[in-house]
Length: 512
Image (cartoon, one colour):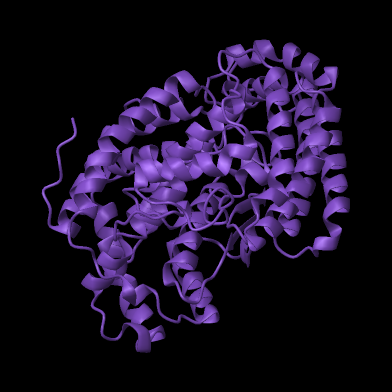
């Protein structure tokens, strides 16, 4: 038997049920997207109820025992079909999701979703007023609910189930030593670079009119492959990507007129996510397979396009003349070499999303450690701002000016949950380096293409090797398939060493 007959009634029933559940999930996603882009704040409580209702219905339909029986009845097909076939993958991944979902009561999911909607709006207000006390009770409730969610699953560490939701197979026992090793290797590199004469990046902090920034960003992401017939871009307080279908993928950005890099690089970052979603095979539409493999794999694509392409010297050899033409007053006296060095300046900053490639992972690991401490009961929410500031002083030698630049700068704990929220960013950086290294080894023309403004080779390679598969493979399976090796820190360290030793004209410390 090589495939399931198109007339196999149980497989067709499973697909039909999954499609209906997916429609409910997407409807909730649309409401969430609207809340973070255009919805008036007066709609917060009603929106929380609406999202919770849809999520509860979707959860009830998915945990219906009929789904479990269909999966059991289809087990013989799964075992007889090739592992990477769409049919076997759909049954396997759905079973994994089902066995996880039946542990969580539907009413709990509704309660958590409603709380998240209200917490998000409170965070927006608290951040604008620089007042953590406004959102503190909501974060305490989020922490309580996150612990309750974890309690529904067997675990060695309370964070393990929450991490597994988005990065399957990853646990605290794997991530802690991995991150500790990375931190130890990064700290001497950071110190060496930040002790060198600083790069002048003042050209980036002039007045750049909003509409011109957005227009240039539109040109860039269309050139790298974003299909505006199947997507759009809007503004939001914290950039994100939403996928409602393979034919409707939406990205967001935020624009600061006194900081050129914010909008452009957040746009390129989000388009990395969007290219992944737009590149999933159409035969997976309406099923649990029509998503990215994991948080880490998804972040690898956003970081690959943002940094390894968007901050690449060849990229700017292509786009800089156009940028100069748009912002003649600001950049006419700035050479492409000076601009390239400016956008790759390494500096200790309090803001994660503004951080350079070298220091970025230190920001992530701070959040990861604080998250674990809260879940373990070692850190109370009321003490979080002080703990945050102390860790920034230790790792980056600075203290945020206020809680909006500190503990409230990221939306994750306030609009989602505590646990599993940040490890994907660092995993993404590591995976991106390993995947990009593999791509140019496979086809050296990829890097030459970027220098000529031709991104098709890279886009096609990624679509063939990663995007089209959706969730057919776990992150570990995909990394091994694409690179021939397990996840490793080494490619990222090599990338940082090679790039920044040239930019700073330094012999960086060797970290074995």
